[in-house]
Length: 80
Picture 1: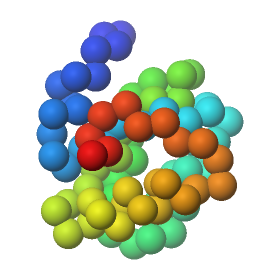
Picture 2: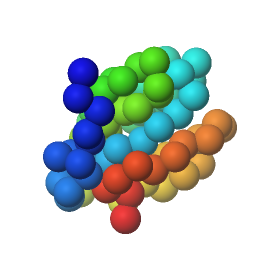
Picture 3: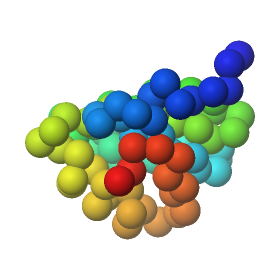
C-alpha cells in the first residue's frame, strides 16, 4: 500500500486525520450521526489514518466537531 497521502491533503474538501485505531468505529458513528456532514474513509485502519470528505458548506462545522471529539484527533492535512 502506498502511504503517501499528499494527493489528498491538497484537496480543499478532504481532511486527513489520524486517531487511535480503537477509536475508528466511534469516530465513524459520531460523524454518521450528523446527517450529510461528512463521509469517512479508512485509508490505513491499522494506523488510524482516515479521510474525511466534506463540502464547502460543511467543512467549518466538521472541523469544529473534529476538534471537540472525546479522544485525540491529529490533523495530517486539509484541516486548515
